[in-house]
Image (cartoon, rainbow, N blue to C red; front, side, top):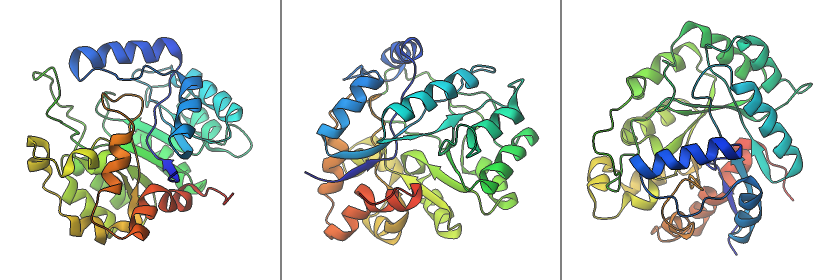
Length: 288
């Protein structure tokens, strides 16, 4: 069985997860496996996953503390989890919560996840500078959905409006101010993938995960035509790519993103980097 570290797995408390799935099935796509956290923790190891992130986000202010407490608890329960916190700039406890998330003496989560396609704020809001400073100070990671996709062919609600807070132009000023910030860009930066690849070449601490992108990249679809990413670019950035699935918020089987890597006409050494070696290094996972 393949070794996999999944850099893009979601986990929420049950009531919030159910609401998210209901929204997905109206606007995006049907959810194949409505798995709550305990089911995720049982299922992924059966697919060869040795470790996986838990990512969630605060869609409004003053819910992040409860989410972070939940994430910390499940991270202690399951040692294979790589737990990430979240925050909202309008949280009444914003600065204290940033320190609580990141400090080794407190929750000591792996970093912070922000989902700018959902939340209603700009990554350049001045209040967020404190978060960027502390991420660097504590050597933690920002998982930032700042890309304009993935806009796949299967989306049900064609009238969905794109957030005004996403796009590579929103991230560049952040990196210019904080060039040492460790950032994971989900979905290969879709739909501006080539531009995000250029950014990852320029900044050594910028990585990209493959979720909801690589599995569609070389199919004959409108998505693949829009992204237009060459195999050579994957080879060039082979040390910066993290396997991701977006599980369980997907309509296809887990095997699809796994096989997307396996079917690439690349050396096994590069595939192993994508599957788990890059993630072990990026997340500082001890070798078992």
